[in-house]
Length: 341
Image (tube, rainbow, N blue to C red):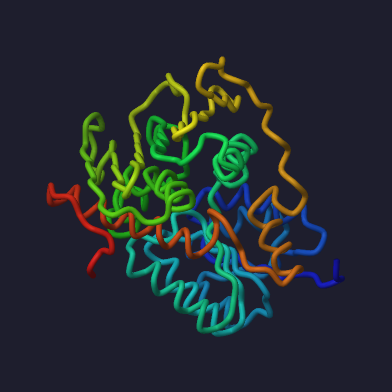
């Protein structure tokens, strides 16, 4: 490994995931968070007091202009991430952004184009990528343990951002249709959209549903579903901001022509015809692939492109699925892929 120390600047801190990512950055011996920017002074004070970052800005544009950086950790609103990538990429800065990729497909396309033109890395940090259970499940699917995949479903749910204790800086924009892209729909259907794009690519058509079923305050939606129709299969995304309990069934679950695999309360269970379900202990994640920051830096060190579910290509396809499902939910009609913008 080279002696290079990657200089990281944080662009936006209103995405609560950033605080966990800062711990990962701190653990890396060859990376250092040297600057951060956010218009909210309390967030600037938080990163100063907790992580000792002293080069602070109210504007990420000013930070990018003034600081000598290698990587941007973007943790702004979904609808503003494209602007960050478009400002950072021409300066040769690699960007890791929090999930989902954007609020709209047009923004995701702008991000891909900016990074491609500049020859920089663009990575979307999906927490599912750092789950040993999901990675073990993914390995079994890729190795053909269940045959040809024809059904994949993932439900993401809790009782709502405000109710579970997300910061006001986070939930305020999650409840804003323009900044988030929707409500629970964009926040949580995105996980299955990304996994389905990773396993099966883009579907032929998409049907989406969303509504406000429980909350008594103004939000875009608190429950949603997306059904993805492939040539020979279905993908199902479920999102919920009104679930007060844990998951009552295995989640996620995948069915193939020769079996099924699911995650059941943390255990990976492989089902094959005529046999009892086999519990498989999730394999520990290998060094270099244990967190978003670690994986991005390892790719930069090795001169490799970011691959898999965190790649710009797969994340962009997930955004197209989400765009189609949103249009379907709002029109009541199935939407064909590609989405015509």
